[in-house]
Image (cartoon, rainbow, N blue to C red):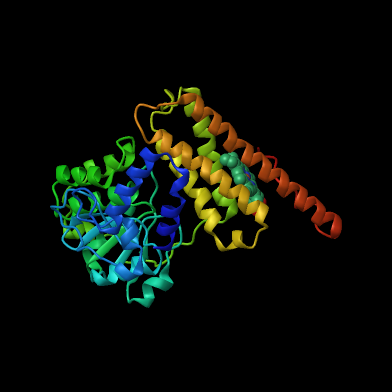
Length: 361
Ligand code: HEC
C-alpha cells in the first residue's frame, strides 16, 4: 500500500484527465475488484501478502487463463492437469501446494527451482523442449510422465504461453483426455501464437496412444536436466542468429529455401538461451559489465520475439534495427572477453597460448 500512497500524493504532477482515470483505477484496486470476467483479483491485491487471495484452480471448462499468487496464465488441459508460467518464488509453490499439486513438470530450458519444490513436498521433473516442437521420443516421455506420476500435475515453461501449452495439448490428446480439436482450442486460451507452427503441429498430430506404446518410454524422470554451458549456448545462439539474418533478408518471413524456419520460434529460442545463460550460476561469478551486456542482449532478443509474435509484422525497419543492436552486443561481449583473456595472459605468461579466443562476431 505504501507505493500506492506515494503514487496518489505524486499525482499533482499529472494532467487532470489522467488523474481522474488513475483515481478510478485505484478505487478498483483498493476495493479488490476482479479483472473483467476472469474472477481473478488484480495483481496489486494478490501480491500483497496481507490480502492474499488464491483462486480455485481452473477446470477444463474455464474459458480464460487464471492468474494466482506466483503463477500466471494457468489453463487446465485435463482433470488435475494444468499448464502455466514457471512458479514465481515461494508464492508460486504455496499456490501449487494449496491446489494439491504433487508433480511439477518443466519443459523450460532453465534449471528448475527444486529447493522450493522439495520444501513443500512437490516432485520436480525436467524434460525441456524447443519452441519448434519435440520429437516422438520426448513426446512419449512427457505422456508417460503425466500418465504415471502422482497428480495433480502442473506443467510449465517460462511464460506458460507456448511450449507448456503445446506439450500439455499433445499429452492430453495422447491420453484421450481431450479431443485433438479441444486440445488445440485450449492452446488458443493459453495464448499460443499461431506462428508457433511446430508446437501446433505436435498437438494437431496427436491421437490416443495405446498403453503398450506409452510403456516404451523411458521411466527416467530427471529432476534437473543440466542446462548447457556457455559454449553450447553460444553455438545455439549463433545458429539462431544466422537464421534470423536469413529471415531478415526474406523480409522478416520464413526464407523460401528454409521452409521449416519459424521466425518467432527462432527469436524465442535465442532469447531463451540468453536468459538461461544470464541466470546460470557461472554467470553470477562474472563481472557486472559482462552481466549487463548479457541482460542487454537478452532484452533486445526478447523485443524481437515480441515483435515477431504478432501477424502481420508491424515494423520491419524497427526489427532490423533491433537485430543490428543485438549483433553489436555479440561483438562487444566477445571483444571484452578477448581483451580480458589477453590481459590475463600478460599477467600470467605461463598460460598456454592455445587458449586463444574464437574469431566469431
Ligand atoms: C555477454 C557476453 C556475450 C554475448 C552477449 C554473446 N556472447 Fe558469444 N561468447 C561469449 C563468451 C564468453 C564466449 C566464449 C565461451 C568459451 O570459450 O568459454 C562466446 C563464444 C561464442 C562463440 C564460439 C563458441 C565456440 O565454439 O567456442 C560463438 C559462435 C558465439 N559466441 C556467438 C555469439 C552470437 C552470435 C552472439 C549474439 C547474438 C553472442 N555470441 C553474444 C560471450 C557472449
